[in-house]
Each structure stands twice: as C-alpha cells, then as structure tokens.
Amino acid sequence: MTIFLQILFGVIAGFFGGMGMGGGTVLIPLLTIFLGFEQQLSQGINLLSFLVMAVVSLLIHTKNGLVVTKNIFWLILGGVIFAVIGSLLATILPSTILKKIFGAFLCVISITEIFKVMMKKKK
Image (cartoon, rainbow, N blue to C red):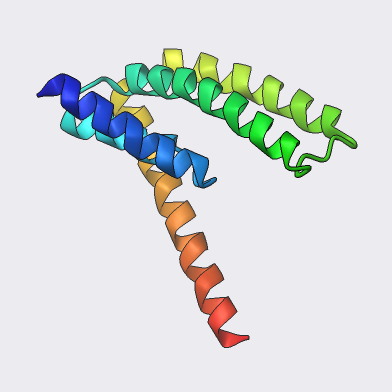
C-alpha cells in the first residue's frame, strides 16, 4: 500500500507541478500527513522530484518559445543564494517548526489567491 501511495502522490505532484502550481505544495503535505515522513525528508524528496520536473518543463517551454533569458542572471543568483540559506535553515530547525512555517506559507498563498479571484470578479 505504501508504494502505491508513493506512486499516487508522485503522479499528483507531477500533475500540479506541470500545471505551474508547484508540486511541492501538494507533495510535502501528502508525505508528512499520510506517510508520516519527517518534514526535512519530505522537503528533500520534493527538491529531487522538482529538479526532474523543472528540467522537463524547461525543455518543453523552451521548445515552445516561452522562455525569456534576458536578465535571467539576477534571478538565478538570488535563487541560488536564498536556496542555500533556506537549506541551511531547514537542517537546523526542528521538524515541528518547519511544518508550522510551511503551513503559514500555504495559508498566505491561499489568502493571496482568494484575493486575486475576488479582485478579478470586481473588474
């Protein structure tokens, strides 16, 4: 049953990741809540799966002419610097704190998306 759930969760995360939502938004809660994985392990698994999905998505979007590379250096530089900082923090912080931070992050995203929809309806 566990392998079936892991495959199912991978399919779900891949589906949402391919749509641009971010598979980790779904994968990390699925792994921690339903499979009992520690937060750090779930984040590590998410990062590995993200790398594969990101390469595939980048190839498809590049082929379709949707990738703009002008001034991308600064985006990459900032992303790498803060990825290192975030990774170091994730190894230091206890799993319970990481879960709370991730939960707060998901709440902020949810509230932001709700406001976007409400503002769109007003227009």
